[in-house]
Image (cartoon, rainbow over all chains, first blue to last red; front, side, top):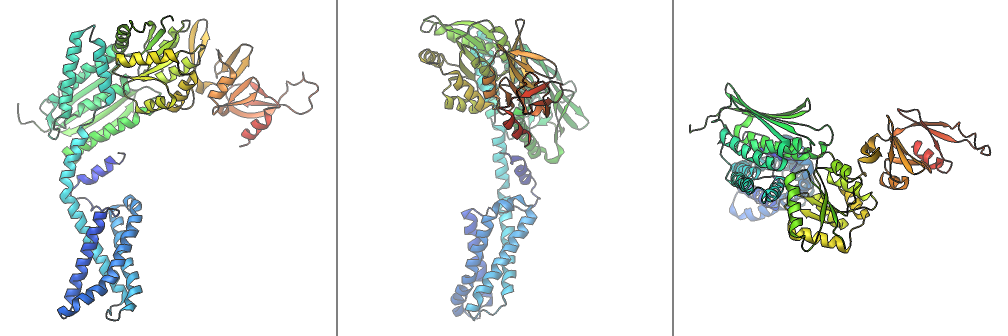
Length: 347
Length: 259
């Protein structure tokens, strides 16, 4: 979970650096072995002067190629955690070097045993490195062909989160007012249903900001049921374009964070400010909450995860055109989002 | 048996209302009386100062003082009330409660579960030590604040501010940079809870390890003319007080100072 941000970025840029296969995956091994043997067969066929010699030559070449490939794969599998830590280019270079070394070592060891092969041992290193390079390029292409599907799946998973703390506390609060104020309880359950409908729908398309605002208001109404006057909200949305398209479920999680970290730990009342505005062709979103001087450390992890989620979705939808920044000043924690103003089709 | 006296602590009014409703519902079978309701840990400590409580229903996540810290204070009372924790979603805490056999209710609270928990308490309530153990698992390092009484008012002294604790007659005094506070706890109990933070230097004194600035010859040993060995006293940062180290404790204290 912790590395979700980095992985996400890597999958975002189709023109980015190549990705390495997983060297502890049996599927990788199978593909590598098949490909290496196919290449060896081609090499034998190219060199052979007649069909008769092919099986014997292939067997001799395989006697070197097979142990070299397996040994190289074993080594790479053992090194996987280190490879992952390297830059992709560096890791690819390491893979190629290891392939070349494995090829040369086994050629030097095994070639003297059969007199037909007459190439010097270091030739094997060149061919092994070439084969490794071709295979890396092929794995990279295959990974990219899968990337759009992976991205879409991730997008859905990212949006389907909700803080259980909020759900169970809200249900408890509804039950708490049920007898004294049945109408309020009814209204709260309607809002909860509405909120969950949005949470559970297919959130792959951008939505107008007005829909996000409506959802946020419903959410805040539910929180007010629990927190009463402790929760003060100030909206500044006069200059905000309601038709601007934004990622779905962006506003509500940010406001939920503000309430959870800023209002709930306060003994008295606290104010969440939500400022939505437009500056030329940019939409600005600014959400701030009070911060307790002590005791905010424990909740930072959850906050970071929610922010990483939103940051990742902004990247998926807007690439580098959107930004998310946070700062802490004058006792208030602030999240600022900037994104390009894209107009919705309707209205 | 008389009806148990209950304390309800939750920062959300509807959550307190819910518990009251449910207690009413099961009153036919299990009569109880809610004697105090409070909005957080500090509020609760102030309100129950001279009120006897048998059972406390305590929400975990609250402002100012959370339920775990409150439970530690409650368990230090004599007699200590039984504590039932209430939480919306805190898997870590729930695990700790189960390990320590401390009861808890999940929000939304159900009448059946509440009745079960109260019935279980009527048979045998978990010892205060079990609640302290669960609290220690969830928030290691003992209480964050100690309760001090002053002219009927409850004061809370942050443990981090205490330079030393000294037993004097019936009370223990806690010295901070600014002043002294009276505590109604025994030095032995405090030593057990805060072993990592305070060091015993004398039968009647615990000193905060990070408050020690150095040591010097103790000049106030004239009343012990028979003593020939030198006696030592600790110098503290921020204040001028000198704390004599007993001969018995000196070897351990010296070993720690020399580390």
